[in-house]
Structure formats: structure tokens, C-alpha cells
Image (cartoon, rainbow, N blue to C red; front, side, top):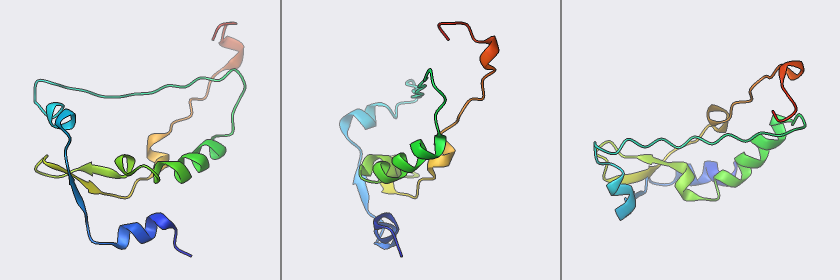
Amino acid sequence: KKTKYQKMMKEEVEEEPLSPTARLLQYPSIDSCIITKIGFKAEINPDVILNDLKHNVYKNSRFCRKLSANGASWIKTEVNIEDHVYVQKLDRPEMNKDG
């Protein structure tokens, strides 16, 4: 059974123009990278997080697009969530009380 996302990807490639803010961020003098780190005191099950992300990322079209070759528009693309989530293995005995 195909998911809603897989059905969407079969449709004709749809381009969406960049917003004024996105165009501004394309200037060579602006080098921007967004990295998010989340920490938990208790160990988590990464499969639960990945599964939830898979179901929710595709609901927001901004998270399923990449910049076109000419940098003028967003185009639909397939996203592999596993490529964007990294679980750090920590040595718990070496961590102090505040992490």
C-alpha cells in the first residue's frame, strides 16, 4: 500500500517560488546552517522518534522540498529522515550530574 507521501511524489514535479526571506538567505555573503540538539535525562527509543518524524515531516511541504539547481524555487523531493537524525552514544558514568 502506498503512503500519501509516495502518491504525492508520483505527481508532476511542482515548483514553488522562494519567499523573500529565502531569497535573502541565498546571498553568497550569508552562510547559514541550522543545527538542533535535543538532550534527555532518560534514554530514549530512537525508533519512536523517527517514526513520529516520518509521519509529521511530510505534512509540512517545506520539509519535503529542496532548492532548485538555479536557486530560484523549491521542488518536491523524497526525504530520508534517518539521514537527519543522529543518536549520540554517551558514556553515562563519565557524565556529571548536569550532563
